[in-house]
Image (cartoon, rainbow, N blue to C red; front, side):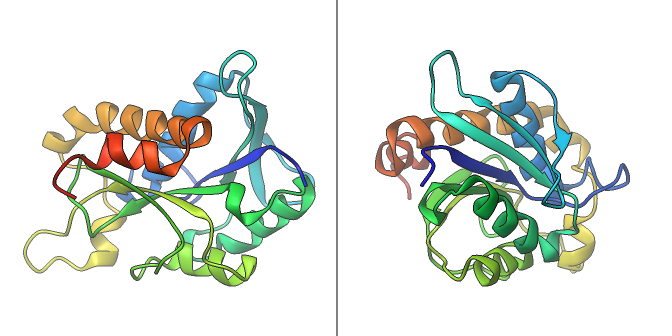
Amino acid sequence: MSDAWLIVGLGNPGPEYEKTRHNIGQMVVDELAREVGGGFKKHGRARAQVLEGRLGIGGPKVVLAKPLTYMNTSGGPVSALAQFYDINPDRIIAVHDELDIPFDTIKLKIGGGEGGHNGLRDITKALGTKDYYRVRTGIGRPPGRMDTADFVLKPFSSTEAKDLPFLISNAADATMMLVKEGLLATQQRYHGAGS
């Protein structure tokens, strides 16, 4: 088995989706790419863009990935990359939007339910296990009676947009800390006393 980590930013392909709430996972992986250095390239065996490198000088080996499929079919690319790089599910991190926690909040876990998130559901099905890490990046609930599907496919509000760079940076930092220091230390740092 490889000692590398597979870090997948979930989202939808194409410019019309890149600034939407559903694509915050890909925004976080783009931030991590700045840490790794280099650019994403289309993978030969999986429908994804990937960047291989290290988190910092001499840091852990990582494969950053952005599936080129729609969110609901994220499992195929994740499974194909895990097989290609020989990476176990317990070294896979899915970075994704999370309706069930407030905007500007980050929670981390391994395993558990998908909370209605179709991207996670498809990854669980493709990997045959729920036991992979999730960096849950809070986008909050839709206002009023707005449909959830409409809400996640809209750009962030102007108020949220001001804080978005900090949220993306924090989620990237939390992902790096998870790789380097483990889940418990990262949860203690990012979950705060209230969770």
